[in-house]
Image (cartoon, rainbow, N blue to C red; front, side, top):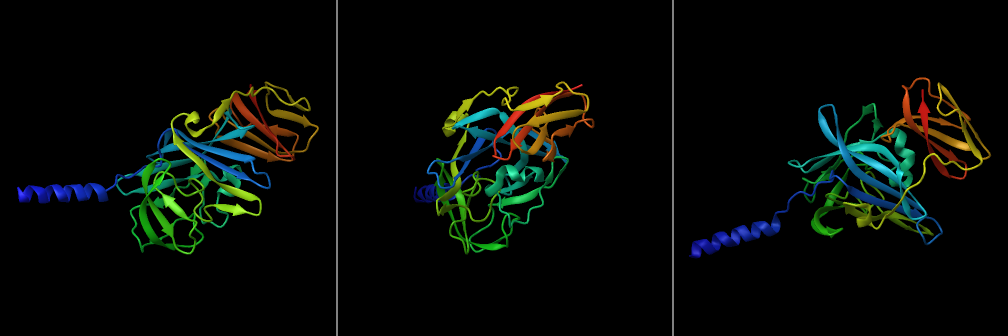
Length: 301
């Protein structure tokens, strides 16, 4: 009987200490990133969401999409494929990256001093993003950090409703990396995790798995074929060149396929050459000098 009690105690102790790995590449996992300047209300909201998977170089990745939020409502048709991610559950590691042409989409939610060479959708560069097999005192060297640093604390922290193995990094008490979450700025920023001061604030404000409503996001249906009265696109359908006229200066004209995959970008132009693309339906997004964005479906003959 005494021996049985000892065995029970050992098993109980192990169950308290041991913790299953919490993966990051979970379908419908959603990160809500937000920032503001002098306005106490967030005026820039980015939503990253994992939806579906794909195979690249014999490895299976989850696809990461970015959604736009306007007037506190998520625009379903704004979905853009920005990167890929995968877990090595046995090794407790996360691999992936974004496409370099999508860096502007995340802006302050990327570390400008990082060492990541992201590549693009046609030549994807995988990076080690997180290694949760490390221990307190170990050096951590991932491309999102400016330089390698030391893990000064490793513990289980409840973040967004689940106990997750988390690291506190040396020399910057604001950096906490957690399984399944990343840092306080989501997936791709490993330094200066959160900032608030001088009227400017940004950070990861919510995380959920499941419907958008689980993250407190309202969805809105926006007609992609409606453009402002001062913008004209012709012809549509087109054969090769699409002409664009607008009363405002257009800073960026970006072409995507129907899955939100980046295809081409031109700046400060009134036309886009689509002769290199096959017949089909595409999404054209315009951004003017005031930061306003509009999307429309165009048809290539």
